[in-house]
Image (cartoon, rainbow, N blue to C red):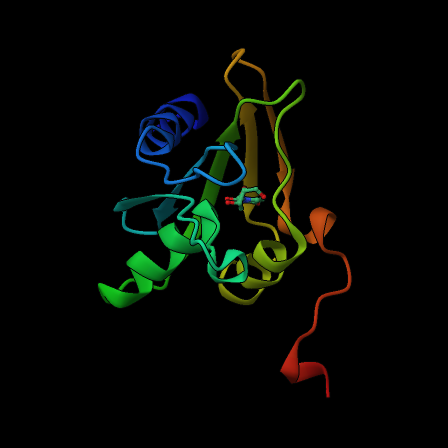
Length: 130
Ligand code: THU
């Protein structure tokens, strides 16, 4: 599975987005160490604060199915430059992925950037520090 393959799965997940309030559809796909793939889309609510990001939908789906050994995650939206995960998703990714895990950022124009969660969130909250 290449990074582009994972982005394509995220792109397909984005088609399921429920985003009638922001009209900003997001898709995500993650790969587990054993190769299993989980995808997610953002799901909004009329009580806006209850909305959930695509990345966390994918991660929570995987956790709920008994998978927690994660390798990399891709996120895609219809943005001018590849989309960045929000701060809350960075914290969740940081908690559950290895520090050097790849985060693949993409947009619908076919642009793909690769970074690491340690770059996106250099100083996370981490209970083991305290
Ligand atoms: N959103 C995501 O799904 N992922 C992010 O990393 C940033 C934001 C969603 C939340 C909301 O449904 C919409 O994008 C606009 O903020």
